[in-house]
Length: 115
Ligand SMILES: [Zn+2]
Image 1 (spheres, rainbow, N blue to C red):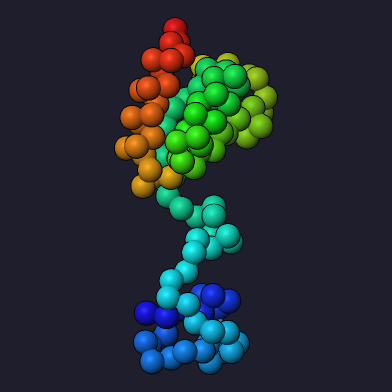
Image 2 (image 1 turned 120 degrees about the vertical axis):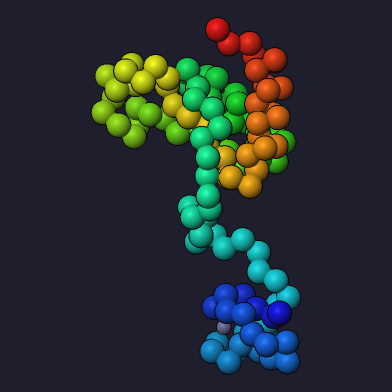
């Protein structure tokens, strides 16, 4: 099915140009940059400190996994809550990449043995 790259609507195969905006239709749409926040995510790993978090994140990115490092201190009320939770932050990945990410996490832990 052809899509309009501008409106992101899907049209019948015989349609060649978007009736709305006149754009030439394309066979498929790439990821919508505006929808980046909306994909399903899971918490892959709770990291004890920032250095581990950054190392794990770049390790995942190198392997093509879209990983986000979330700092609990930035999200909540400083170190009090962080201390209560017992970790510094968490690494979040897209749900569809979770199983691959977990394999990589196991590798990562071998390279950087924690406590
Ligand atoms: Zn259009």
